[in-house]
Length: 404
Image (cartoon, rainbow, N blue to C red; front, side, top):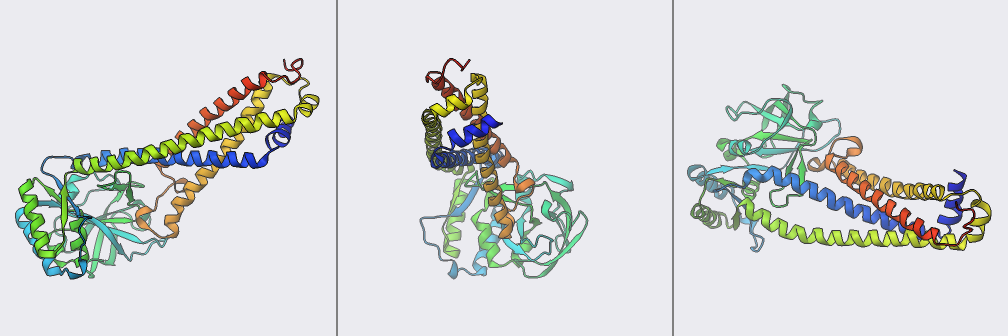
């Protein structure tokens, strides 16, 4: 331990500004590695989740970004005409969110209500930790719902929630049929690496009658991610024309394969940039660590020889180097873990239901997987630095007679 303390004080920290610079660059490289790793994991999960949408005759709507849309001019009578036409001519799925309900909970978290019709519900594999799936019959009395794991203690299976529905603005009663799995999420259809978490959400079933009683907000929101099933190009174009002529809104309808291709083309460019920056940071950090340590040893050659090298062997020196760089990488890794955790906690500070996660330090599975990848890369980098330095040190004439 005395040898390690001496090395840290007299050798490694001789140029403390360089050490801080090296630590900063290692942290940046670790953060970029973590970001890329977690994004890849999240993209894979999103791809697996949305595979069900990649089927013939399925088209997903979104607003045309190249056309200026005038939402102020839309009336609910116009949007209802669109839904009447949909009901008569199409099989369609609705899974829309963004509606906040005032439901008391110990965390004082806002609660997001997701409205889903039977066709959309059948498309998805919604996994429960307890309870049973919802049905779509008799939704006019006590409506069966699924709730997120964050609400489970206060509203267990079988309990009834009373609230003002955020889209009908009428009092309603919800019966908890099931509890979603912890940190259940829904991946974005257009950006597979993006997720909304459902820990403080409610899955509320809807039907044609509910849509008629709903506000304009739900009518427009649901059109944004409307999914047409078993449709043809002609039927899609007919619906586009009807929506445009009725409401003035212009929508695109793409297959999930087209959405995935657009995302992956854009995503790969970003990932390549992150990978390049990460590699540059690791090269700079490695070079800085080796250069700083070797220069410090050369500057302290006399003290190094007189005070420490009597009885010091190469294996002991290698052990000291591993301990030192182990401390450096541990500090960087700890700072990264704290930074990621604080970022997860920020959703709780904002009371943001769709980003609130549960778990140790609020980190979830893909966070831990990405951190493990960072740790493995740090270990490889540390081994390379130490072994490269040992080769250099052995070639340095520092009292070779006692380095046995």
